Amino acid sequence: MRNNLDYGIIGNCRTAALVSKKGSIDWLCLPDFDSPSIFARLLDDERGGSFHFEVSDDYVVTQNYHGHTNILLTRFESPEHGFIVFDYMPRYRTEELRYYMPPEIHRYIRVIKGRPEVRVVYDPQINYAREATCHEVVGK
Image 1: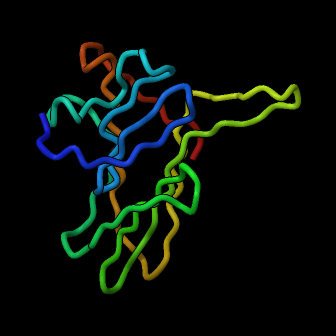
Image 2 (image 1 turned 120 degrees about the vertical axis):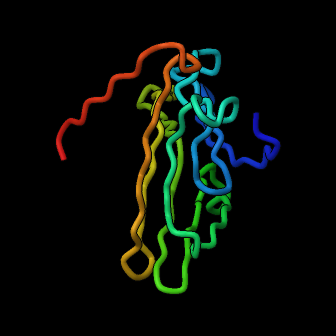
């Protein structure tokens, strides 16, 4: 179990995810708060699963929320390169004036300088890593 519990949170009133100061989603249950975990690195570093970024050690990483929103910004900057990760979980108001809260995480990466080299690691471990996880890439 992790000793440092300094996390940002994103959510949509249906579920929520915990995002570390290094931009790693270390806790997420989908589709609801009380569903089994998808990412549980918070509980088990080796088997819990996460959705994170690997960069060289010369990057400084900072995190804050965008204005008065629940959009979490994680900024990776080195002397030559930089990018920002925008994380949020959508919540829409429908024409019937109801809220639609899809069980989705949106991660948008925007380059702010140079040509950063980053490895994206998507490692879901279903149901607290008790079930096999299958991946399928569709499209490009």
